[in-house]
Image (cartoon, rainbow, N blue to C red; front, side, top):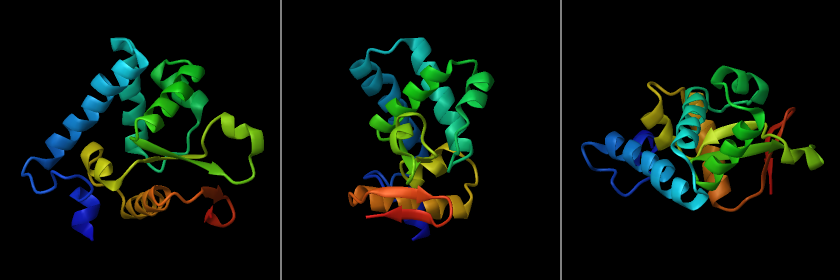
Length: 158
């Protein structure tokens, strides 16, 4: 199971330079695919990579958009749009608290990398608890379950 969590999600798992290939794939998603689809400038691509870097260092990330905005010197609205672009590009997963109603349109309550392999590619020594939580969320989401987060009970879904 440990090998799958580290490098079992993608078809080039057995390659000796797996992490290099995975980082290249992530860069291609942002620099080529997302840039082309969303007509992004080089500056916007740089901002996206900055936000992904912050998320990767602290997943599961409980975003404080205002602090992140100040830290990166990027407006709050742009940070939010970047988060939703990264979700659209399948590089992150967003989790909402189950009682938020319309405020779901604001910011997610937690942000996960889309899969555990990204954790190993983007961060040295990922935390085992974060790996488990990311794996659990990834599996349920990809099985098309609705997943919400309850502050008192943890994950909640159908």
